[in-house]
Image 1 (cartoon, rainbow, N blue to C red):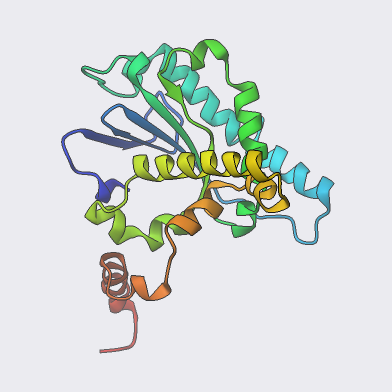
Image 2: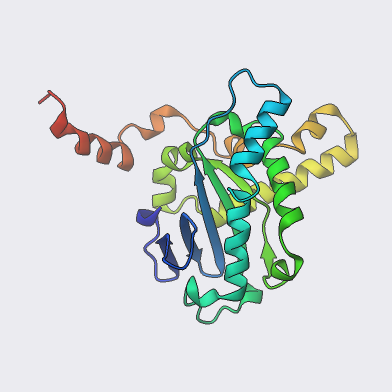
Length: 227
C-alpha cells in the first residue's frame, strides 16, 4: 500500500510508538485504519465453533476492539496519528478495515456480524467527533494483490471501493423493500468481498505481466535454478 500512494495529499504509516494500528492511510480527509488478521476458519465446525473463533479472534480485545481503541485514541489525540492541517475532526471520514487471509471469512453474514459488534461497541461520543465513521470492512488480502496495478494506476482507490460498496448496499435495500424476495434478503448480509467481487471481477490473467507480478519474479529469480 505504501507504494500506491505518493501524492502530496496522502499520508501513510505502519505502527507508530503511541499507536497500535497495523497500518494507517489518509487520503485528504479520508482516514483508513487497518488491522491484519491471519486467522484460520474452523474446519468442519458447527455454528458454535465458528462463532467462538470469530468472537475470540476478531472481537473483544482483538480485531474490532483494536480498531475501536484506535478510533477512540484518534478522537482524543489526533496529533499522535497525523498532522491534519486544514481538516478538523468533524471533517474526517473514518474507515475501519480488517484484512484477512482465510477466504472462508468472506462468506455472507460474517462481515455483517462483525460490523454489528463494531457499531454496538463504538462509543457514541467518539463517533460524533467525526463527520462519518463508516461500516467495518472485511477485505481479503488477495483483493489488494490481485488489483495491484489498478490501485497503482489510480483506476481504483480506497475511497472509491467504499463508495461502490455503500451504493451497492443502498440498491440492495431498495430491491428488498420493493420485492421482499429471498435473493435480495440474503444480499442484505453480503460482506465487502462479495460485493467487491461483483463490482471488480478478477481474472488470473490480469496479473501476468503486471507490475507486482514482474517485481515478484525479479525478486525470486536469484534463488531459482533457471537462466
